[in-house]
Amino acid sequence: MKKWLISLLSVGMLFSLSACKTGDTKEAETEDSISSFSDAVKQSKGETVTFYGFGGDEKANAWVDEVVTPTMKEKYDITVKRVPMDIDQILNKLTTEKEAGTKEGDIDVMWINGENFYTAKQAKLLYGPITEKVESFEKLMDVDGHNSTYDFGVKIDGYEVPYGSAQLVFAGDKERFKDGFPTDTQALLEYAKANPGKITYTAPPEFTGSAFVRNVICDIVGYDKVEEAKANKEDLYKVIKPGLDYLNEIKPYLWQEGKTYPTTTAELDQMFSAGQIDMSYSYSQMHVAEKRSDNEFKATTESFLFDKGTIANQSYLAVANTSKVKAGALVLINEMTSESAQLKKAEAKYGYSIPPFDSEKLSDKTNQKLTDLYKNQGVLSLEEMQEKQIPEVQAEKIPMIEALWKEHVLHE
Image (tube, rainbow, N blue to C red; front, side, top):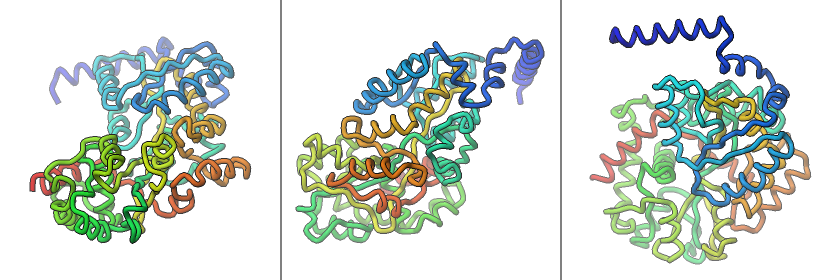
């Protein structure tokens, strides 16, 4: 390590120790003083809390503005400021602030998961653990379940609270798939050969296209083998090669003969709606219901999965380490993951989001309400979706798989 860096770190450590001794560090006092959700409520009255997250989903935005924000003001006298920003920009901002020694920043609550959580946790950009300070976590969620313990294979350690469920779900017009939907990779290959140009996928590193590639690999070689593979490109390639070989085999029968790929899922949906291709997909389980209700997909469009399952994960809410209103941030997370707010988010108006709840902790009335919301919408039952779920591949392996796809499929 360079001498100047050691000196800088030493000065920083001395300053931190001095501040802790004199009690002048507001951040330390705030963190130590929040031992429970009730503490957070008491300390947060009158605060303004920012929520940073992807701003491209108008229905999700409307839910924050029309449901969460007024409730926070009425129940807790907390003002919510929604700031639309992509997660990579959020992490860049937090990293820059940390490098500059910023103790109090503008970001309070952020919408995060996967590789971005891995990055943020590694860089110590998050405040926590927080789960024991958020009432809804214990009250409504499976606290010992996989999604409360791991995020893309990364130990959560209480640094984020589940916010919404996601699962890769395919969409097809049943009038086009006369012999049934292709529910495994072999059936998909046969359909592509019989209908050249009618199947395609978005190019990694686009988020959902990357999941599609991983799902194909898992369907062919098995999730366990991918999970157990060593986290380096050379060893990983040996394990996933059969999946990459499959993607090369289907390539000539794809739209544009696989010479180019759609870049976004919005483009994929547009191509599907126009009849250019016969299949689309989404990480939202209610995607078909939403598109049918908006008259973008035909009423004969239905959801389907691979028989061996499709990749599922959850998105989360976390608090920035530099938040100056950590108490208010915890209260906001609690409200955004409350039963009342999540049930509103599950409605068509706000995008049919599936709550991250443990159904056994919900009342019969709430479970029935969720079931009724999803009936006759061209979507699968919650039971079938949950039965056919594959855990996410470890976050550190995802960029390696994307790089291997680029090297061995895109440029093959």
